[in-house]
Image (tube, rainbow, N blue to C red):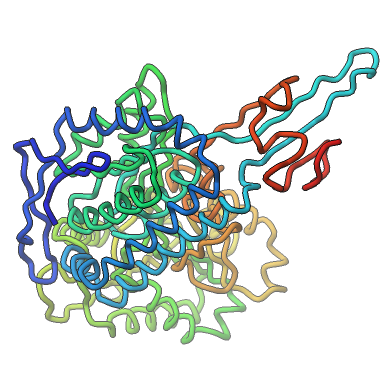
Length: 527
């Protein structure tokens, strides 16, 4: 590691602002010193990105696919060094590091396959009918094209999968957009190593200089300047509601407003239906204790709110959940600031009138290790106190005891937008309450049946987003192949000569992609 900024294929560090990352396991700063990007370096990275965009956008899907595959190969070539740096900057264990690296590789290769197949451009062709009366029909053809340079903010809780070469970067590069990463200050070393892999891959596959840059930043200044820069055409962000909202406001105030695709806070409500709970008290308590503590509760899909109807079974579940969750040993959080915020969030919630702490771990633990907890409150109190609706980022969940399913449904309807919602139920039981299903699907992006929300599959059917503030635009996903749609816009061509059309829209269909031809899916040429 050098601690320098990656400006296209060059390393630069002319700035005076220096910082180090932090090892939460050892509770000490790491050795490497990093240099924050200067205004000149920001401008240079964006000038390179802007200049290389026309060439990169026009590049074939095969060439861009080879680039993504090469990135995956280069990340693997970094070997154990990358794993060790990941662990030192996050406090996460080796198994998590290897697993998350595997997911990142899979994402890159998934987008590579998408590019090789080619139908992601959503080509639409409506051929002309010149003799139509009373007005002839023109020839119209439409497809998606890349937006332009994209800024990606590295995430705190996923140093690989949602960061430098994670899903935002992979999907933006696949779309044909150069990427400028603003690395997360907690993971600057991890980001530099992954960034070096991206730039090696770019050079090996003859990508234009500037297709990727990685900039260091201790605070918010670099990120703000990137969003405000006129060459930037879109932003990808995973983090807090406060951070996402600030970026959205900056982007909206520009002379040319741009989209910010922000995945933000979520408490991921879980509904316990009475009949289901009656038969599954202990198994559900054990299952959800594991989900709540997974990754020290630092997943955006952590089940932070559990809703049930008052009953002896719900009381027993709440008691057993408290026992199960505190049976786990405390584990390390990502950073001292995150650990402090977790403790503050719990304390603030515990002070709320009407809330009862069910169980709170008090095991001896090193600094930055989270003490997991379960609390409970009645439905009426929860409804009246919006502070109880806020996310506590860490291994915590609040059990809300409702008077009946009507009150429970009302609570769901009053929640802010969420990434996920889960219903634990018997099929016949929930079938009698379509109003509850409707309430849940109106508030969440992904509706889960009899499982846990932790775990996000990378596939075409995944929707990782939801109504605000879970995400800034509920029509889009941050995970899966459809996440590429964030970085493109549709363009129609009317009555253009065939030889001047993009290959995706030409009569002969030289790429052999699936197209919507006169309202029917087809790979056939137009004769």
